[in-house]
Structures are given as C-alpha cells and as structure tokens.
Image (cartoon, rainbow, N blue to C red; front, side, top):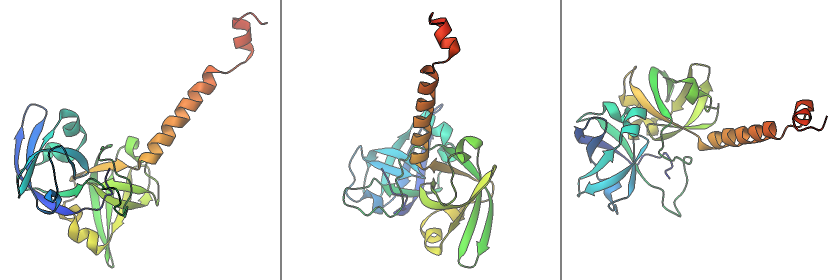
Length: 216
C-alpha cells in the first residue's frame, strides 16, 4: 500500500523491452534507503517489485498486463518518473490509500493556471469516470489528488506549488498519457451491490416461480 505522496522523482536509465514485457532500470536515491530485494516501489502509480539495486539505481520487471494498462508502455530512457516506497506501519497517512494497481490511462487535455494553483483536465473512459467523484480521491501517476470537477468525458484536479515542484505532473505535455487509480472504496461498493442484486434476483418468489415448481 502507498499514500500517493511522492518521495522522489527518478530518471529512467534504461528500458529493455521483450515482445510484451520490459525490464526497467531507474536512477534514484531517496527511495533506495532501507530497500531490499522484493520490496515494492510505486513508479508513476504502478506497484513494481525491486529485483536488483545498488546505491544509485534499481531494476524492475514489468509484465504484459501492466504494459497494456499503464503509460509504462511508452517509457523511454531519460524519462522522469514519480517514486514512492510502500507505506510503513506507523507512518502518517497524508494522502489516501493507493494500491498501485492501475485502472487505466487518461489523456492530459489542458493546463490552466489560477493564482498559485494549476488546474489539470484529464480525459478518461467511462469505465474510469464512473468511479471519479467530485471531492473524492484519485491517484494520477501515483500522486494523491482531490477531484475538483467531473463530467461525462473528463475530470479536473487542482495542484498546489509544492505538488508541482516534487512531481512530474506539470512536466508533461497536452496529449500525454497518465496512469489513473480510482479510489478503491467505490469499486468494492459496486461489487457488493452487484452481488446483492444478483442474490435478490435468484431469490425472487413470484407467480412464475410458484408455477414452475408446482405450487399453483
């Protein structure tokens, strides 16, 4: 689990691609403190497992499913990425619960400055937007943000100068892809409601049910 509070901006040192997967080496410093093989580092919002590391870099394997769902499929040497180590017991939860399991990618449509803040408009599919709630939480490239506006085609977030300075969000261009993880609570609620609705249908007793089993 992660919080969506970025610890460091790393730099992609190399990308070795297979047919559908990739091995990525990332330069970093802060997130390597206390790291072990098998630990998780959230990279642009994607939970990845450290397979090797030294004092200045770490290596991760990215499987085909992750490549399909995230912007890591477009990653290249020299790209900057948002990094966060997994949450430790006792840490402050300053953002929100982020699993590092991406729901999909969105497209940056616009940047708009308003006094000290920057509004970012992100276009997303209906499968993602159904979980986006105004004033709810969303993780964009691993950054925990509050949804300030949502409609049937896009949503907006507003970021403060600190977030601009310590993440890659404002280094991107219009048309760039960003990874989106919706708040997990909404997905669980949807699942439970579907289960309840299915159970209600199965247990429905009406004239047709009684007739089928010889009661009428």
